[in-house]
Image (cartoon, rainbow over all chains, first blue to last red; front, side):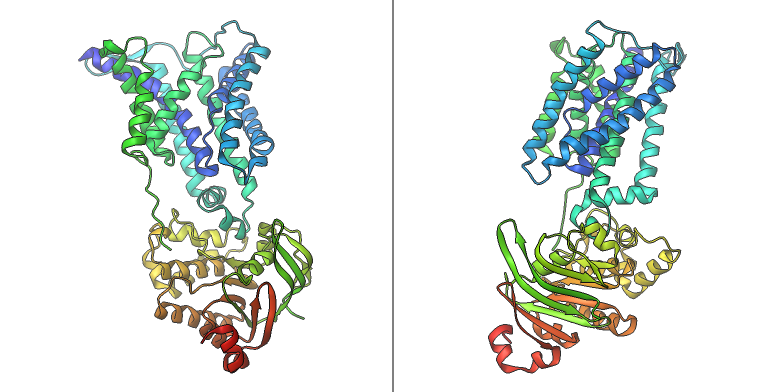
Length: 294
Length: 236
């Protein structure tokens, strides 16, 4: 029981990270209908920026904040210069571009920051607190949960309680009609990429601080898990991404503990999950089936 | 001076020319009706006005300002509300959010009052305020489109085949509403329709489009009663 509980807690810690990356994926998908395969590598780049800033003795949170701001601008620039010109062309073009970004950014990271593993300090206090049935929870896990909650609340407020959020939702729902209402659709898409890149920067920096070493492969497996979470959540739903991220995290931790047959190839789990979701319920657990009447 | 004036407007999709030298004007406070068969260029004309289509030659002026070359979002901000075919519904947003999008560029303090007003004018929308707009019937969505357009307090309303897919009674109600808006609020309307009979009844001036050209025009009442025009173009 104790082992089970502590594995669940471990899973939640990882799940928070998957949820955050899934959130970024869903945000771009909702506004632009693009699945951004470069999300993980954009986050990797930002993680390196955070790490580099901490080497100048900046406090970790300040470093992450600056990195998020840089990612915000970079996300907007990527949308403007690489994604926008593909408007009106085949959606495959955009997929190819995001795959190119994936490879390009990964190479760029190694070129700029080198290939030696680095170590990123954690923004959370060390140690653990006791939890039910003699299990202990790392303070890091609690910190990650709090960050995720704050992030979700902020996004929810932005989307549902501000004019800017209404414009974003309008463009996501019906871009042509939004333009006929005087909404600058292009600016909204750019903004969607910007926010999503900033969220990714946060996720990347937190993963980097949590792991023993920061290297160029940091986000690749995370992206697979995040894609599984996004698929499970239905790609359209913010809450779906969050809950599914946690579910995937816990499922992964339990698989590692209890399913010996998958030792060393645990990544089969998210891939299998994606497959099952797409076959059995293409709208995911939380996705809305689109019903339109004419 | 006319509120809207199209002079020698030509345009189309890529190399395909759909409109040829369209001359058309809408007087302030009037209802202009554009009739014609499928493919005559009715929708294209509206799309040219609201900037969704590139105008190759000619000029479109709204209250004296040229609209040619401006993007749709800028044209909308000048006070032109365009209800497209398909009604432009934001299907996965609530009815209330749909209406708020209509007023999204307004800075005045009367938005809340207008919202209450239109929910009262269209009680069905009031009942469904928190429902997803896409779950409503075609007639309700058309009413929503009209209310959403009005939330912008437009100077000119462009309507693209509002009767499409609606039951005859619902169509009748919709046109009564349009006539009312024109009469009581002085709203200027340019409506494109297949239902010539109803449209001409509420219109002041009518145009008949044929393969991208204006074939006939005149006072709506005269077109309505002209046997030759009716047989040749309107089919009733």
